[in-house]
Length: 635
Figure (cartoon, one colour):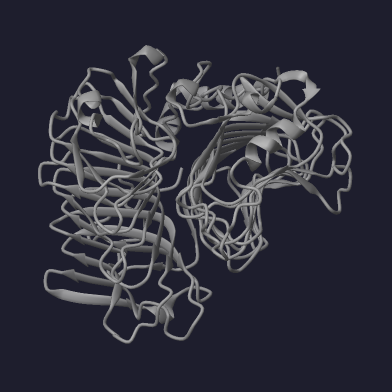
């Protein structure tokens, strides 16, 4: 079994440990679980009892590290997909989710795995527990000028809900022309809890996202060793969010961005080459709470050749400088806050981001499968008559069998004893009406959070109590909070209706895709709302902040699509409240962009930032609405 090596990260952890306490506290607060290794979503226990999976062993895969499992895995990927009647619809598989499960083992393959359609999830039993390994000197993986992908999704902008998670991919040795994962996912999808290793350090790219059209999606808890590049991104659309990324021993650069928008938090790099490389005037990198060690005195930790960069709480060691910005060397090895480009604000002393307190998303793992209850349709398509009874049965985890359900206007109340609901990609069709609503009305601030994960679509959530709520890797129809709702963690979530957060709530969102059509998307009505990676579509404000709320947007993309005939429509509205905004835009037709990017009203005085202030016709590097901000001195 191949286990990802973490020795290079041990050095990084020691560097952080021996920093002066004041600097260590200022720059970062890593959870202990991420100091040396990662927390896989599933660690060493089999989830096949949840049902609805395509288990690769049922198709003949051995997972013994000796047998060639290529044909068996491909047969599992093709089942009920290859040769299907697409009826000329690129989203044919959208309502037909598929989860491919790899139990513990090492699955040896000799050729590329072909991915058919969208809404597919490849899921293992954990990093280092499930491994897909390319044979050494495999045929077709030697040409460095024409690299070949081991796993490759289709391209396009309708690759919804694609996931690779909870496994390790090893590209073996003597395969220098290899791309481990050539990946596209849109709106919600990602690479989660995955280790990627080249045994001899050779290979083109661990994760390539340069085809049409990567994002919005999430890369989280990913470890990469070797390759010329750990991650490459391209195109202008639609933004990629990365968090807890560990890279080492790259040959050219760690992360290379050629035109997309990357929002990165907690990138740990142990490299002599640059950790970050931004190459295009259309590219933006937002990098937060990261550390780059092992550098060469001939290199900078960050190379910004062109485009926009926002860096906050970054440390480096070994490099000559922390940043070279278009030839200008920033001669220091730490950055508290640095902006490439103009900082916009109607307030003369507001020059720095809001710095709202950040909490890590909680995790919950119930390894005892006897504590799981399974929801399925035992009778006909959408037979859910017993679901509330099962939910109330006292089981701590509720698993929904992967599949498609016809559920019309069903409401289910979630008791405090239920800690997690995992749909494993299942979708719910209401045939034009509300499909299913989950109601949370028990609990307070001290109650255990409720986790809702991997819902394909069709579920609304009504949050009526102070019980904390975690929604991950899901497309939900609607989130409705009461004025008494508790804190919310949104991680890789897609919503298509307006969302309102209220006074007293704290919201932490990582990769949040809101596509409410032609109406306001997010209304912060007195809450603290922290967003790392936002993408919106069509008209209607992106975020409105009122009632003394505080909003911090750290990177994202506005993609209005439509023409604006109203010269008064604003993307961001702030009324006697505080906000800081970093974002990019994409507009491909005349006037297909908000005429007003920011409208602020404070003490009766209105100020506006017009679209002609975009840097490179693409970015707002930083906008600040806060009239009493004090300068934060760099250390």
